[in-house]
Image (tube, rainbow, N blue to C red; front, top):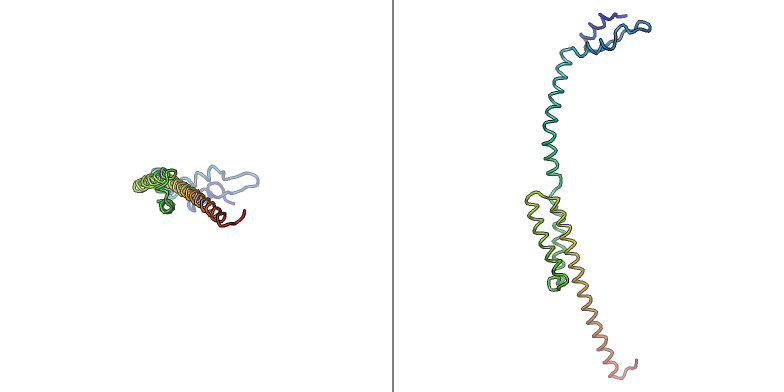
Length: 175
């Protein structure tokens, strides 16, 4: 069994902690083992390197966080395509000619223009939000245009039905 002096020398030379137990007493205490380990030149060098890396990490962390947050959202190109598609569909259905849909079509166009400007400035989150609103306005203009067209078709169908009924009545058909 090693005594405290031998164990201390062994720990220093082998960079390890050795406990020698003599019945119920520790002949080599924890304090001495840790002191022997921490006083080794390699341990001091490793601790100094860890401190240096930690300083570098804490210095660079805010910069990396700013870079990561600034580029966290890619350009919303799909949302732009969806908004443009809905806008084009509303225009093709004649929303620009109908007063109830004109305002929403104009708002959608303004929002898409503003979103393009924001995307060029790297403000992708705001641009994405505007594009969602632009698509909603275009969809609303499209729905209003369809409603107006449906009302016109219904009115026309009503007139045709009345004309057909009148024609049949004049030709002798009974109700």
